[in-house]
Length: 242
Figure 1 (cartoon, rainbow, N blue to C red):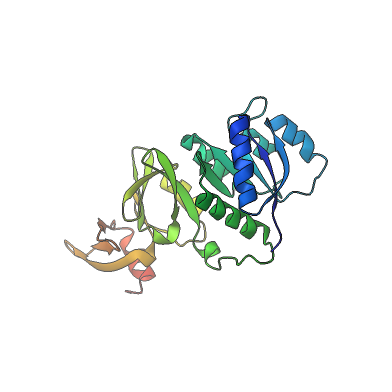
Figure 2 (cartoon, rainbow, N blue to C red):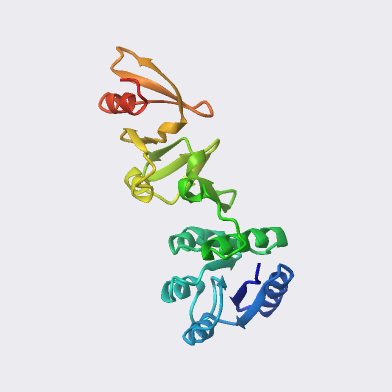
């Protein structure tokens, strides 16, 4: 397995030096280091041999997010920052990973593995389930988590905030259930109420509510939600109950 050639942009010299050392310790070859985004952008115009870019977000002249948006998509990008609030923007720009400072070697190794998967570098074993289990960012404890859709039971919208349920309740970047559906068009998510979107595979039980026209739905993890009268027939059809 050949070494990855990476380039770094970071405006704080000590952080730049430390990250370069960590990358070298992980077996990477440093193709270039830059103190700002403009210099890296100019260097990339020469079409250098580089596999991935590690970018700080807040840099003078051209910040990391703007740089990502301006360069060819063939360069996988890992953002490295002390500011967790930028994670949603980073993943909207299809970042391979998002590292919070101070970066640790185990976390960096995971990011490099994701870079290899993005590049399909020989010697890296791709995850065959990745396409079936898309992820999405949520806020948690002042930081950001990436949740697997396959581990999510349902989404609920409250006052233009969409909450995801995956063992716990997490705040997402979305403001409507329509945005969630658009993000996962092939996931088979089912709207069972105007404020509820479920993953049918997470349903573990149903029973009649009231006159039987509606049903209560029990989801993995124990959550119970009610399907609207209009959505109940489609729900039963999806579950093979009709």
